[in-house]
Image (cartoon, rainbow, N blue to C red):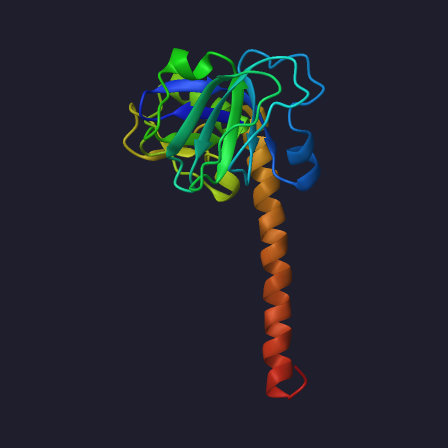
Amino acid sequence: MRVVNRTRKTVLGDKVRTAGTFLPRLVGLLGTAGIEEGGGLWIVPCRSVHTLGMRYPIDVAFVDARGIVVGVLGGLPPNRIGRVFRHARGALELRAGVLAATGTAPGDRLEFKPAFLARVRSEVVEMGVDTRRATEGPGGVVETTVRSPTERNAVDMPISAAAVEAWREMRAKRADRLDTAGRRLLHCALALSLSEC
C-alpha cells in the first residue's frame, strides 16, 4: 500500500504492508533485519507499540480513524515500549528518520491507498488525462471512462492492460453477485406471495 502525507504532500512509503489480524500484529517487524526503502507496516487496530527483540530503531506515526496523526515516536530504539495514544486507530511503523525527513507531525492527514490504485493514477496523469473527471469504481479502482483534456466527450482510455483487466474481472464478479442476489430476491418475493419464504 502507498501512504501519503496529504498535509505536507510527501510520500511516507509505497511498499507498506498491513497487519490487521492477530498473528501479523503480534509478530509485526520481529525477525526482520530492517525496513526496506519505502517499506513499512500499518498495524490496525493499535494504540501502542514496542521494539522488544528488534535490532534496529523505527519511526512510528499513530493515526486516528479520520487519518489524522495523533502522535509520533521518532527513532524508537530497540527493546523499548512506546507510550499509549488513546485516540489512535492504528500505528504506521517506518524506517527511522522517515517522519523527520517528511516533516510528519501530529495534526497531519495521512492517506492510505492500495499500491495498484496509486500506479493506475500515476499512469493516468502521465497520459495527460483530466483526473478530476476520473471516478473511482467499486473496490477503489479507477474506471477507464474518463474525460480527456483534448476531447469534449467522455472516451474510453486504456489506462494499462493490467488495470483494465483487473477492472473487468472485478466488474464481472460484481455482476455475478448481483445476478445471484437478484435471482434470490425474485425467488423470495415469489415464494413470499405463496407464503414459502
